[in-house]
Length: 211
Image 1 (cartoon, one colour):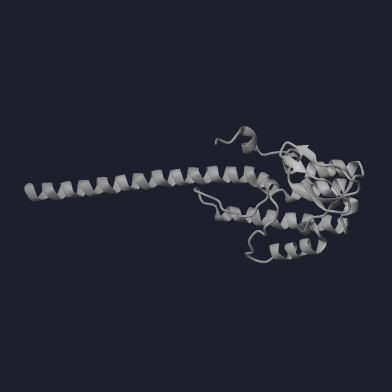
Image 2 (tube, helix red, strand yellow):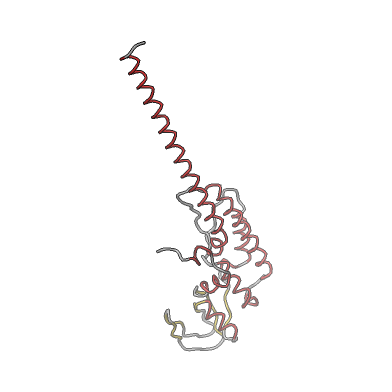
C-alpha cells in the first residue's frame, strides 16, 4: 500500500494520541455498570472492585465522571522506568521494548489520571530522560544507514514520527550517492575497455604493418 502524504510528512502529537486511545488499559470501577456494546466488542460488566480492561478513551471518559480509577500499567511505574533508563544508557544497548504508543499513553494518563499514578512527577522526569536517550540512539543510527534498509527494532510511533523527516532526507542522499557511484564505476569500466581495445588495435596494426 502506497504511503499517503500525511504518512510521509508525519503526524501531529494530537493525531498520534487519537490513534493511541484504542489501546487497552486496566480500570477499577467505582460504580456497578452493565456491559457496554462498543464498535470493537463488548466490555464489562463493571463490578467494584474487580479490575476490567477497557479502551483508553473509555477509561478517560469514566475517570472524568468519577466512575473509575485507572490502574497505571507496569511499564509506567517509577522503578520500572528507572530500570529502562539504565538499560538505554548502556553502550551498544538495543532499544528496550515498550508499547508502540507508550509516549502518547503516558501523556494521556498523566494529564487525566495523575492522581491514580504514584510518584507522577518523578515519572515525568524519567519519561523525559528515556525519550532523550532513545532519541540520541536513533540519531546515532544514521551512521549505520544504507540505501536499502534501516532496522531499528522497538521504536515507538512517536519516535518514528520524530525521526522520519531526517531519515527520509538521508535515504534520498544515500540513493543519490549510490547512483552517482554506480554511474562513475560504469564510466571507468567503459574507459578501461576503450583503452584496452585501442591497445589491442595498436598491437595488431604493429604486427601487420611493421615500420
